[in-house]
Image 1 (tube, rainbow, N blue to C red):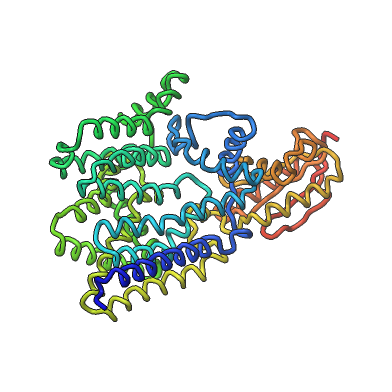
Image 2: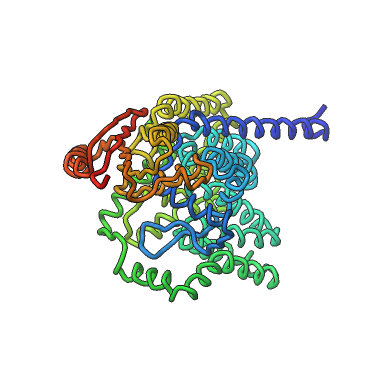
Length: 501
């Protein structure tokens, strides 16, 4: 029976679907492993979850999301509204919400397959799905309760719809416009990144855009502008153009963290190298960066500057170019928009090897899988290489809950106050939220200000231990007499009988 026979094609298609479902389930397992113990819930998570609680419980509709690292500039609220769904279902359980978001993030396995298939072929699609499943960098991001992981599925869908549009399926420009706007809601910088990407795509494929019906173009542009700027415009109208003023200050160098162009080049190269290693094979160091460069060369040799190579090039390099123009200090999460493109480029390279040297292609794939699994096995149990948790790797969710329950037990129904030593300093929102959640929202079990009983919660400050020791000796001791002390995992809980008593 020839391979082109409909029955053979149908069987082959079922094998692909089953493989993708298995990869999806493996992806969820790898990303949720030990999460019930090691979930990171810090001040930023507390701030975000309090905002979500306002949305769910008080119907407090918000037009903005979490603040960025620039004062007066905010991400969009898409993370808040997405999180409000599992929040409502679970009554605010951080662990359930984390699982929900991981499942959502793991849908990227399907999305990277359909995009890679559209750009190249099914073989590249399957290899891309495998690499993204085991990618240690992708696993780390998925475990971060933050808006940034939403960029993975959104970026893949955006480029999938753009690719379909460039293949003369003009109706797909409409959902591409929506996804472009949603990317800006997940990460404020994506407004600049995606906007520049669209300009580059229009220049590169002007013949296709100019031949698109005016109705499709009008609807797409309207939706893109609405989803990108609509909520920010309404917020600014109500708040005396706060965001616009701060964006202007940022553009003219009156705010932000600016560095020299040479320093920025060095930093961008370093950060790009870290991202490539994290998402392909961290343990191989520069070796995997060389693999990526070879993959790029093969991509251009085989495809010149055709549609697929053009899309990937624009996707990969526009964020770096924009950051160089902005001269803003580079953070790791700024590159999250492009990481799936890195995976697809290497997947294409392995697919090309597989065509000519089957066993060599399989060897490359197995080596990358093995390298990621070794790092995963060693790093996850001790929270190693969790970039968002580096200053406090042993700050664990299970210990936080146990400390809260211990405090309530020791309080014996009396009113009590808390003071937590946090990183960053004096930001207790994470603790305040967990007291609310663990007490089922009962106000009588919440800490209050000025109570006679004070519980001081400390975690090791590995970055500045002398400062912590000085604080305990000079500040905490002045609050009153220590009457009890407990170790809860890596946390220490001190009960203080305050001087006001």
